[in-house]
Amino acid sequence: MDISVVIPLKNEEESLPELSSWIERVMMENAFTYEIIMVDDGSTDNSWHVIEELHAVNPDIKGIKFQRNYGKSAALNEAFRMAQGNIVITMDADLQDSPDEIPSLYQMVVTEGYDLVSGWKKKRYDNVITKNIPSKFYNAITRRMSGIVLHDFNCGLKAYRKKVVKSIEVYGEMHRYIPVLAKWAGFRKIGEKVVEHRPRKYGVTKFGWERFVNGFLDLTTIMFIGKFGKRPMQFFGLWGTLAFLMGFIFILYLVISKIMYPGYALTNKPAFFLAIAVMILGTQLFLAGFLGEMISRSSPDRNSYLVEHRKGFSK
Image (cartoon, rainbow, N blue to C red; front, side, top):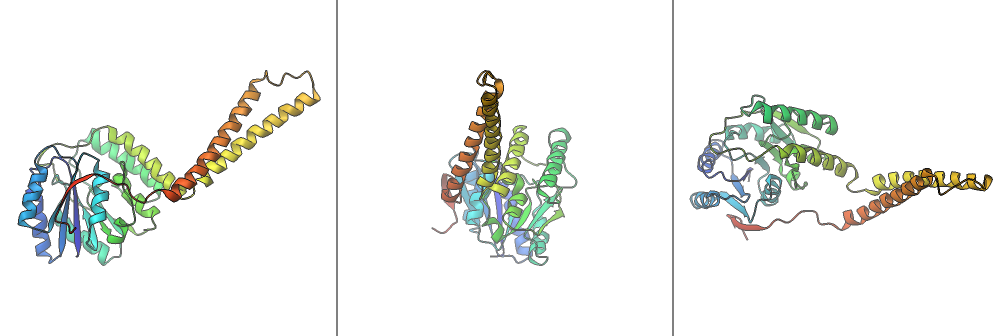
C-alpha cells in the first residue's frame, strides 16, 4: 500500500463526506493504493454513523471509535498502530488542510529521502490573537530547545515514512511535537513544505487556551524524556549525589566547629537544619533515579486506549 491517510476527528460529521471524496479523487488521479483511517475521538454528533456509511461505499475508508474523548495524540497513536501504508499522511478533518498537497508530500518522502515532512501554513486564516501569535511564540521556543528548524511544528498536515510512526509513541498533548519525538527516535532528515491553509468551512475549533499551558509542559517532558528517559539515574542520581554531598560537607563543618569550640550551639543554628534538609533531598533524588531506572525497564512501550468499534480492519 502506498499511502495511509490518518484523520483524527471530533464532531466533524458535516465535513467528512466532502473530505473523503476529495481524498479519493486525489488518490485516483495519482494511481495511489491507499487507506483512509478516521479516528472518532469521542464525538457526540453523528460522526461515527457517517464513517460507517462511507466505509460501506468505499472499503478503503476505515474507522476507529474511542469509547470516550482521549485527545488528538491518542487518536494519532492508535491510527499509527493500525496504518499499513508505506507513507503515512496526517491531516485534520475540518477541511482546513488540502488533500491536493498529498502527492507532493509523498514525493518528498519517497524521492528526496525525508523521514518526516511537516506542513507550514505560511498564510493562516486563524484568529491572530488566540492562535497565530501564540503559535509563533511556541514554534520559536520549540526550535530553540529541539534544534529542529521548522516554522510550524503543530501543523496537522504531515507525511511520515512508515518506520517513523511505528517507532514513536504519541500521548498527552505531544502531537504538537511529533518532529521532536521523531528526532529523539533517531530520524534526522526532517523537512518542511509550504502548504495551503483554508478557512474553516464547518463547525468550530476544538482547542482552547489550555492547550498553551499543556503544550509547554509536554515540550518540557519531551525534552527530558528524550535525553534521560532511558537513563533517569544520570539526571536524578547526579543532582541527588551533589545535594547529599553539599549537605554532608556542611554538617561535617558544623561538627568540627562543635569539637573545636565546645560552647558552639550546633543544633540551634538554622544552617544545621538546612544541611539536614539538603541531605534528605539528595537521598530522595537518588532514590527517584533508582526507581526511574526500574520503571523504564519494566513499563510497556505503548499506552492502551478503550476502542469501542473498528471498521474496515482485518481481525
